[in-house]
Length: 288
Image (cartoon, helix red, strand yellow):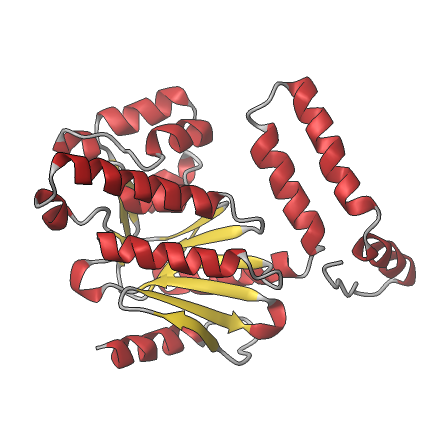
């Protein structure tokens, strides 16, 4: 089964914009970490649980956390794509069959691990993109919400249906959704357990862009490639300025922005950007 899964990922990898050499960084039963485009420093984490519609089991979360830890320490990565090898499924949410067998204390421990792992994704220093080809429900949408950018396929279905199961979105959904959409819209979606089409999700800003389902990974890769061509230190500082500043008062946020700007002033890349502009050529950024 794993060899067949690898072949599917290699087929998907042909959508890579420049078709450069693909290299596996690590693999496990449920997660594939792939360096898709070596010369653009783009990494891809693929959810790969065919037997469970990418539902989030305890084992899968442990493997996802390991993959996140792997990319977090790699200073060469400039963008990350989070995607799926299971056709029509991004992530169906928590593994409810496994959840049913858990004592109450284990449920809370599992959800805490889920929340922590998604926070690790949110805190990655470089831009992240969720490529949502199909279903992203419950924990699957919470996973996508932890990414910076979300690209949805035209057949995608998104939602947080937890209240229909007498629980709440506990892996960041009650916090990230209102910050993205506003309190009233987030309450509506959560209280009513609404499931949205990709078009509806696009109209309210839940996804950044909608494309045909077969082009989701291609579009995400194009965006990641564009990101990777910009100054990598500037990208990291911009992300830090936005993510931390949004929780501050305007005065404190502007002070924080100043500190982030100071992080790029003395870099080689800043000077290279100015020189390339003067010489009317494409800059070559070295991440220093």
